[in-house]
Image 1: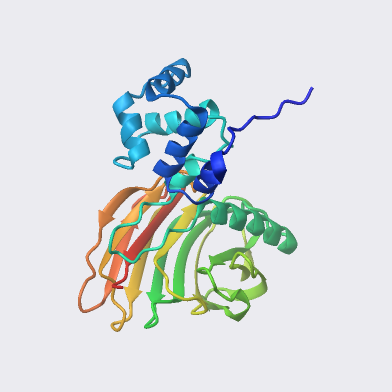
Image 2: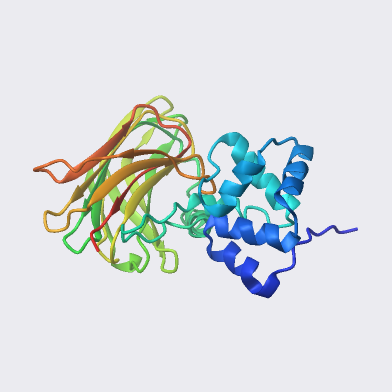
Length: 316
């Protein structure tokens, strides 16, 4: 017999709309109302799932006064999806989208859905090029510089990689770039700068994902180290508000610098981290824009699986 998850009825489409667009506290409040459960009953159901959350915390969550962030709180959110008969990840993904700061002019960050769709497209493009997800290289160092242009657009980025092969026969690297919404990947250009040349290029217009082969001109043996450098010229989208880098495996040092055109300086910048695209953002730390270079940076001494990024707000 097939078993399907039942979902709560949607009063007037309010819950459906809240789950699609958020924010988290509105969706949670609508879901609790749809089930007709007082917070004390919600707390009781959570305790039966082995999760302890106070009624006060639940009240704060649905009012937007606080957001679940700790691991135990995230366990509670996943349990709430089951208790309230909601689709998997429907609440947790909303936590991946930071609250809008009043007066910041900031739109929401990349949505969980867009990141998942880009991941699926990346898998397809890798397959077209015959490049597996494990490229056979371990990162010893990855230094990246992003340039934001006078139109507030992501104009270009340059990357310098120091890698070690963990198997014989590795002959290249797959560049992955996702432009901002509205970008034109067919107009982007990948330039090989040092110890490599550009091979085949593939892209997906809908998600803005571009992949390109970098060919080393030699085959590495297991244990060999290699240095290479490349750039991606973009400049095809409108206003950029963040840059992030995801890592699937642990590695060495990662440094990210964002440099702004003197004619387009943000009002504030901050770094952030995420354990996964579905997880809430944490590790927030304000970054002052240095003069006269107009740049900010973060350095991670050791790469861990997850996401590291820098976001910024523009004057409206």
